[in-house]
Length: 417
Image (cartoon, rainbow, N blue to C red):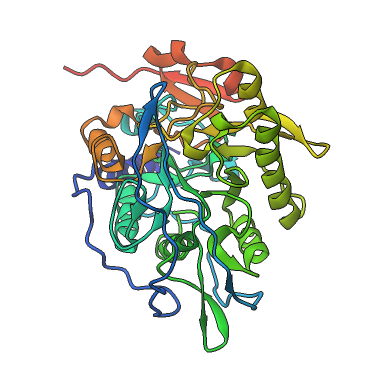
């Protein structure tokens, strides 16, 4: 066992050097090839419009244009194989859960030596990154395909690993020891997020769409799971009429999730109680009707805005439309900074901050650089989904109600001169 611990310690040390302390540039040169087919994206593909933002109650509100397309496609299948985004092997760029040699599935707590090396902090910050669409140039709401690929490379090299919003909120943060969870969110259901191309009579995944890029990245890096949260409006999500059912089911079947963004992208502050319940409840019912047995219970606020009066505020969280109740367990703002840990006393699942996916002040690139300079601020996983490990000095910040039945582990680092 001592020999096993020594080997594990060496692997962990190498991993911390490679993934947690990378001092690379914010934008990494594109080196990967497109997946499956080399087809240019139609220049008429929809992208999220670059818009202005406004600050309201310490949040930056969102301005986007909701559009629909009437593009017609007929195939119900994509000839595109995907990985499930998991890897059973340990490599120099991945730390697997510490495993009992007698039982591969059992998880054991980290030793003091491993705690010293990894320094897990599950009360650290988590970035929920807000994307809208891919286009020809970068802005606060749009990334080029090349920049989105570079974003994934940067996240990966810095030791981030993806989880869905629901898993983050529920505390099901299953990433390897020493890694940091990151939530990628995509608003509006733009075509550039999930596009199909017809090639020789077959429908193929567009390699320059957000989903296509994530799938390709997963194939090259299996420990980058197929995760991401897509917030849809009514009508024709992802802009290809006839393919909506296929796309939303494909996302859920392959590890992603879909959520509510209102039916018509209405400003909820302009709606009365009935209007709020209609646009939120109707959209949920439409999405759920497309996915058998699926529950939509997360919301990205249109324009990042929510009524302040208590009655309408509460109806954004839960209400009834057409005799059917809805309830959101997590509500996303636009925001401008990373969010606290789900175990932190200050965490509010109904007002979750996001980081805008741009290169400007207090946008995504800014926070990545901040983590390079201040790695202690990040959520660092202990690799065990059944435990919550934090430095002893931070334990008073923990909300034990949110921890639930997980085991809380605290530790102190050895003092050195």
